[in-house]
Image 1 (cartoon, one colour):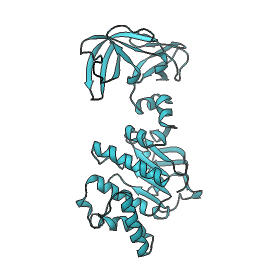
Image 2: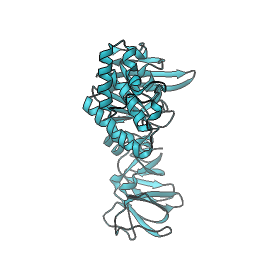
Image 3: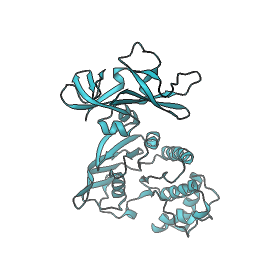
Image 4: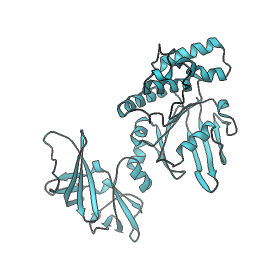
Amino acid sequence: MAELQIQKLVKRYGDFHAVRDVSLTVADGEFLVLLGPSGCGKTTTLRMVAGFIEPTAGQVRLGGTDITSLPPWKRNAGMVFQSYALFPHLTVAQNVAFGLEMRKAARPEIDKRVEETLALVRLEGYGGRLPRQLSGGQQQRVALARALAIHPDVLLLDEPLSNLDAKLRQEVRVEIRELQQRMGLTTVMVTHDQEEALTMADRLVVMSEGSVRQVGSQRDLYERPADRFVAGFVGRSTFLDGTVEAPGRFRTDGGLSLTCAGGQVSNGGGKASLSLRPERLEVAAAPMAGLDNCLPGTVEFVSYLGAMIDIHVRLSPADRLVVQIANREGGFTPDVGQTVHVGWRASAGQVFNK
């Protein structure tokens, strides 16, 4: 394992910038997740680290060594692809041994590592099977075992769980995280799934349009998003558009006057958005005391999510909020069309330049 350094990495295709001046350091043993929507440059960045895409500019260093111009097989990086990329005509054991054979390892060493690695991913006894005889979760473990068998300095994961069903994804992501922590692997994973990223990462990197928007822990990005994009992408937010009339006072486009705090705008004049997390809001049949904001509204939609319930409340013709409440026995759950009051403290919202 080793520290990974990405320095001013750029990838252009003609006039199109797929990656713009990305610089990151991944500490030895750290699990870093690149998070962002499709087309944001996260997979291109990962593939430049792996050596499958040549950067237009910039440098990749692993353990202090410049590997920018090295081919993939000389970087000692283990890669797990979105599609697993297993060889269908090879057995599980042969797939896991492939990287070791390419490195001309001795046969006894190959056999030993294959056995050890299959045990590591809980696939003892599966070495003689073909990929088509395995479930999706088992194939994913084989792909992971193949990447781990070479004892990589860095493990690279490209949307490794996207082909699994929801329940299996939850199980396998915990397995990967526990395995990474146990082995102390320096790891970089790409995903567009924010829940996956929040569950697995030591640090998150939010990307958009080829650039890094914010780097930090889960709490940093959720509690202190750098801009409206991060606030909307990490977790859930409702945005009320309007202007900041004065420090601490926000007026929505629908005419609501609200008390606010925090965010990027401190004085009036410019268009802005007030970001509110659904779980930070309260809803009741009557006005609530002790809150900085409490407004009447009409319930337009109620979404039952099992453990949680989402309540969509119209505050004005231009303003609507989503309130998320816990599904508790005897708790207040309004009906569609009912008049309710929505309240929150000023610290629950953040204001961003629009």
